Each structure stands twice: as C-alpha cells, then as structure tokens.
Amino acid sequence: MKSVTYTTNPGDRFNRLVVIEKADLPRLKGRWHCLCDCGARSIVHYWQLHTGGTKSCGCLTRERAARDSQRRAAAELLLPPTGEARRRSFSAERLRALLVLDDSTGIFRWRVDRSIKTRAGDVAGTRARNGRHLIKVDSFVYTRANLVWLYVTGAWPKHEIDHINSVRDDDRFSNLRDVDRTTNQQNMRSAFRNNKSTGLLGVSTEGRPGKFFARIRANGKSFRLGCYSTAEEAHQVYVDAKRRLHKGCTL
Image (cartoon, rainbow, N blue to C red):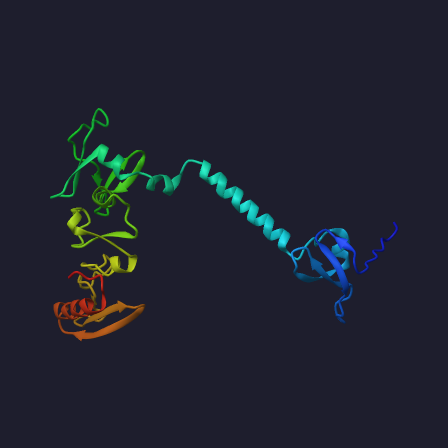
C-alpha cells in the first residue's frame, strides 16, 4: 500500500481556511498559520487540512450549533406543553370556571358536576398524610394552597406558598404568602419528629439527661445558645434568637 504525501503551500485553500505560512514551532512539526473566512487566525496541522478534519477556526461548528438550537426552539413551540409546563398552563379562568372559593375558610367547592359521586357544591379534594389539602383538576394534582393563590391573584406563585400560622390545611388567602425556600423553612413552629428528647423546637438533651441545650442555625452556620436546667427555658431562648435571626419567623 502506497503512502500518501501531502504538499502544503502558502495560498492553498482548505474549506474556510487559507494557508499563510509555516508555523515556527520547534516541538510541533507540520503546523501552518491559517486565515479563516471569518477573519480569525489559527494554527492547524497539515494532515487535518488535507483530510478535512479541520475546516475552519471553529466558527463553522458554532454556526451549526446555533442553527440546531434555533431549529429545536422552533420545534418546541409547535409541541403541546407537557409535564410541569402543562400543569402550570392551568389558568385562573379555568379554575374559576370549575371551582368556587370560600374566602373565610379557604375551602373550594365544585361549581359543576364532575362525576356521579362528585356533584356541584361538594368540597373539592382531600387531606393528604402530610397535612396538606390536595385537589385533582384536569388530570393533575395541586395543593389547595397553590390553587387559592392562583384563584385570588390570577397567577401561579413565583416561589413557595408558606402557611403563616404553620397549619398546612389552613388555606385562607390571608394565611398564605409567596416566599423562597429559606424563608419558608424559617417559619417552623414545631420540632422535627425525630426530636424525641424534648419535643420542643430548637431544644435537645444531646444525650445528657437533665441538661437542655438550645441551638439555632442561621446564614448557613449553627449557633449554640447555651445549656439550661429546663426544656422550657431553653426553648424560650431559642424563640428569642429565632425572632432576631430568621426573617421568615412569625412566632
């Protein structure tokens, strides 16, 4: 099999590249300075020029990527919304056509008959294990709090819906606020279930019976607030610190 010899000279054109001169690179043989049609310069190995491995300074690849992105974007505009986008496309007008809200309780009732078992006037949805009230509408399940926000404001919440009094099924609009995750978490009023030593928010025995330690987390750091003889005293110290450090606290 005969070996192929490539001859490269200044002025030769390879796709978008025009050879200018040989690159003076002691450790990198066979490189040539090239000028691209876009005006950029690059150094390319002669083998890449002759075989078509390199056709431009990189602008050709960028242009193709931009065209592909435009085609994908155009195709997505023609597709019906799916998943979260479809769920969020549920409008306030559609909601008000199906349900009516009791402002004083935050309870929805069906405005129209939905099935043999679900009639106009019936309370919509059911209470979940986590305490939140859920409603299924047009094949999607929503929290009642989010639907109340959409019903009253005409728009979906931008962040998360927080219950000001921390009662998860108290969906009166006056008890709801649209806040970020950190602010939402700062509005805790009860201890985690795994805090079995005291059952009080911010207080634990840390494995030392008869000693009660208060600890709070703020701005990504944990602060120890001291050791106290009673759980109630430690809890009050925690609450005082929480009111100062947590902007989302409503205690």
